[in-house]
Image 1 (cartoon, rainbow, N blue to C red):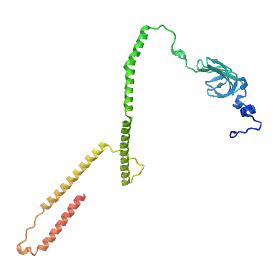
Image 2: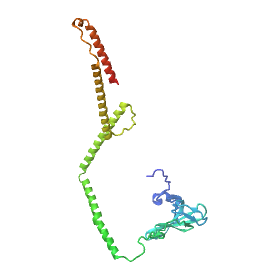
Image 3: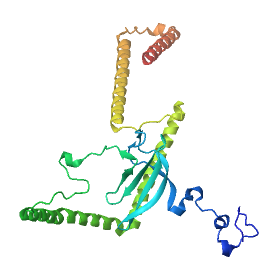
Image 4: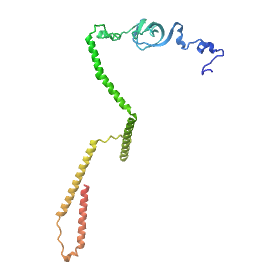
Length: 296
């Protein structure tokens, strides 16, 4: 069965040609493999460092990309060594860069020179990049013994107890995962319920006072609640004292007024209607005075 989007000519023979590329005499990599018979593959190469072109003496920055001719030129043990031959984009000169598996870096072999920008640790009292042990020096047996003793002491007093503690914690957490999961889910439900209740209370308060829904209300602090309760008690006490003082003033005012003399029996009947009118007027005046005091 023929594949999709492929045209197989009538004279195509699968056993003879194997593939359409071999039938047409083309390589699978296309123009990149135009020098494949020489062992050269055209690939995209990016400069790993700054260089100076040996032909035009121009500076070429790190990261500039070229269509380089990649070729295998040898091996370092089992690691292949490749060379990348590039043409300068500022002139017609060619330069070549090779891999250096021994030192894990690139080396300019011809056509250019590398711009030296590396920090040399040997000039600053250190060791070479690939010489971590330093120069061979006579070994002090006492120093070696002290180092071994310190390492053993650190292992027995610090590392082993720490590993045992971590192991105990891990066993404690993994001994009963169902119980731990149930506690976590219970705590989550409690927190979620409290959050929903607070959200409902906040929405009710916003609706009561006409506040915008996007307004975020802060949580009530315990100190603020205590302070508000004390202020409410103090205001209630002051209001009660003020009402009591007003009542005392009304009583004193009514007592300080002179009491009219009682009429004789002969004139009591004739003045009954007049006394009732005075009493009604007096009660009305006292009621208005008391109401006005309460409004203040």
